[in-house]
Image 1 (tube, rainbow, N blue to C red):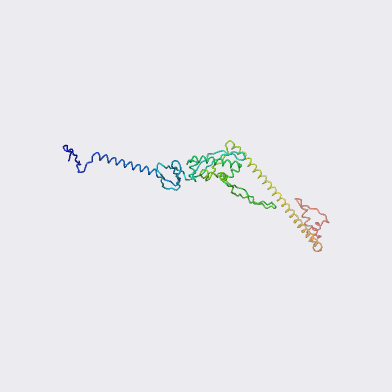
Image 2: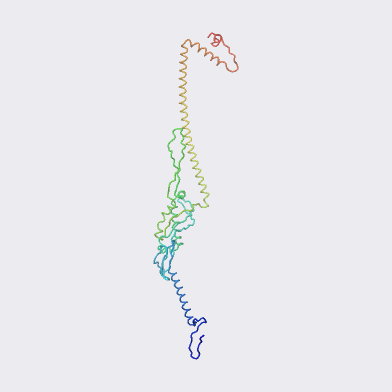
Length: 350
């Protein structure tokens, strides 16, 4: 192996045992520095690349800001880019959001307190206005929604009575339709019952939504619907309301009972009147028939007695009938005089 020549001061190249050229310390330092710079460059490039990418998901809006000022809004899902370290990104939800409003007390127009528990479905429609007015904060938006919905609900219910609020809960009302309004004029009873009909009315949600018309223009959000989960009464006056409702239902039941008795009495009177008329007609017809029969009987008797041959026979028959009528009970003894028609029968005078 070649070595350093001390006489000449020259430096010879050194070789490894396998014949390859050995590197000196300077070459090693230079190579290490070059590798470090390359690694730093790669890391910086990766940082810059990651800081310049903007990934927008399907349920998001992206706001690109430059020194706090919104430069552009990304509404479509996908990959976009920004200037690294100069522009920043804010994320705004795009999907439908649910906000559960805390239960609150409201007073109806008839001074009845009710507890209303509701929720709101809403979403962002204008991300730029949402950012300008609510600082891209969902909690800020929910605070505004809470105040707006509560005021709308209070204004709506304060103009309605308690029973109207309850009826308008689902937007439907059941009414009873009386299809038979004719008076009872005969004894034919109409057993057809009244029919129930469901009619559409304006629901409580629709009433409340009519009060909310400025949210989208003002804050860049849309309240899709306000749904009432529960309508209840305060605990301190529930029992009083239940007692009053029971009393009202009893009054209604008493009214229906009185109306039923009145109609039953009217039907009974009408029926009795018709029965009396029918009996009178039947009695008149019977008397007319009896009169006709007696007249025919008298005519037959007249014809019989006008014929000498029939007179004796009918006298005989009549005498037997008279004897039959006179013998009644356990006593079968009959005392007759000689001139009695019956005695003459037995004496053979007929």
